[in-house]
Length: 401
Image (cartoon, rainbow, N blue to C red; front, side, top):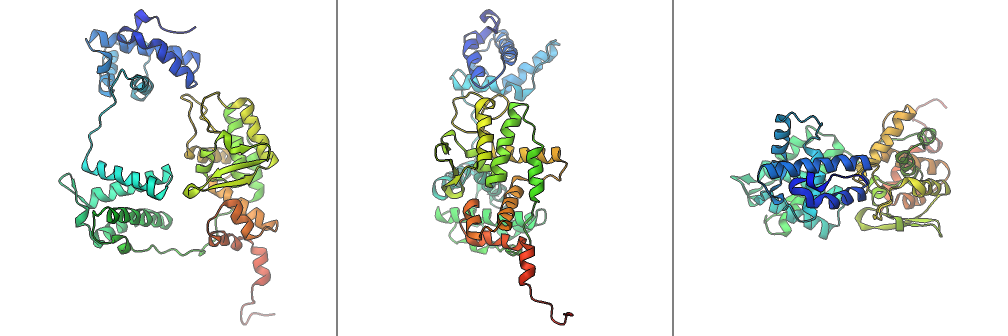
């Protein structure tokens, strides 16, 4: 058994065994556990030398500890400031170190209420709430913060336009449309809570850029297959990434839908999988054999043993459910291996729709697989069947027969 003797852990001697178990549960290797227990001992001895108690430990105290160790010309290479977060997190979880008390400003209070409203009343996903809150914080800081006080009651339509003009000058038209939606959401919240008397959301101008004005970005089916064929299966992470790619390429799952998958969502007896889509929707899709085989390969030995019901977990400690942005990383790494231009997971979703259309599937069926709420969204893919469009195209007036 690896470890650090209690007598060498100083003020943290009573936390050695608990920290060892905590690290093991999160998938740290025995060698890493041993090194992190040594770090705990160094901190404990430093606390004792400084006449400090365990409860006095904080981010600032850890910074002071690192400075002290560097001045002592410590031979052992120490982790940076972020490397000490597991220790501080553990000590706070067991209650021996108090939680950090961040300064709460009036803006933080308002944004906290906005966050709860988005979650409880609008049912937005965590990633969407982060994006909306970031825009709200930036807008209110620039247009409604006076001497540390938030004054939304003074907002006018001109303030909204000034902010949007500045934003539209640095982002694409698609992102600009997002800013409009985010700003209108904030105005709706402020009006419903009585912070503003007028519905300023109506003053937010639309952004030019018309629906169905362009072709959706496509990817050839042969390129999608190349991504899958070039995936290695040598390590646990590679087996996991292949299963993720199969779900995206063959079922058209969004990144957040992959991250939300639970072990209980796969019904192996009926060959179906439950997908948690936008707006708290739950849809059932058939699980193709090749996709099921990829998931089984991951569950059979590649998935870490952790008491967490999420299907996909991180490959490194601390073990935790994957985040949605990891799906994008998986697809981009696959593109590099295949020698293709880097694309995001949504491009594979478009490719699936195009492939279904070319094999004779109707727009209704495509919309059901992609879980579109509005058939008009699916109608965009009718434009990619160029061969069929040529057959119905009228000759140009005056052109030679």
